[in-house]
Image (cartoon, rainbow, N blue to C red):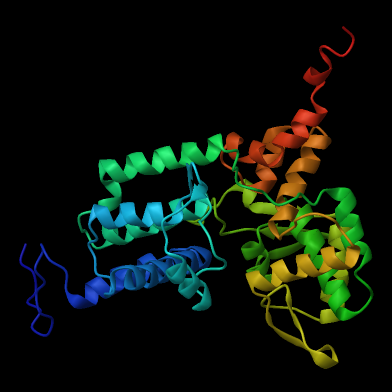
Length: 355
């Protein structure tokens, strides 16, 4: 079959990409990645660049040698010596990293943070198709042994406390009848009762995905989430917002007069509405309400999600029903949230009580 001649469009070489195509590929990869992931990658790469410049007196350039990654690990991982726990990052460099805002505090990194920094560097080499020092056998072995060393010392990753139903009620009691109070009440209940929404999902909530199903009852279609990044149309995408949560949402929509766009927005002076809340703002709302309620413990926006799961375990809700609301794909992932709760309520703990 004869093809028409394209006089104005130059033919492409099938085995190489043009500059325009490379940029388009980069744009699609970036757009398909979550904003939180992008921020965490950028933060980790900035830290690598700052650490490298201070440690080696030069600008970082990929690929890095495996020796450099090994140095990064021993600089940031604590090990046991006769003098106690030590790490190799010189104090003056550590202080400079903190003073420059690249590090939050002096001292070694948590193991999870260290692993994340290595993973980001590995990804950077992978994307650029460079020899990856993070896959060097010595690097992989040191990371594995470091994780085990931390575990032997009992340095487990600390999870935030769960906002189960009773502490959630204390937060709701701090929400008055002001516009801000009605917004926060609706937000907290929407996030908790619809299956423990992530803060990014709350911030991205939009009226076009909200459907009224009855008086004070709604269904929210979660078209994009951490576990459904391809936007697949699935029955479990539809999250119910019923009862007290539905009533609070209906009241917020009535007083705010929101008809389209972001569901939860900033409340400005004079009772005017501003732009959509950011994920950080959702976190701050949870922190502020916990403080006003006088709750003791370590809470975050994710406490709403873990609180919903833990409450479901308390009430012996079948795991598949809980997962349909939370969106978890792995039983292991959802059980992690309520492991301590399950152990304290387990009937197995009473086996030897009467002996």
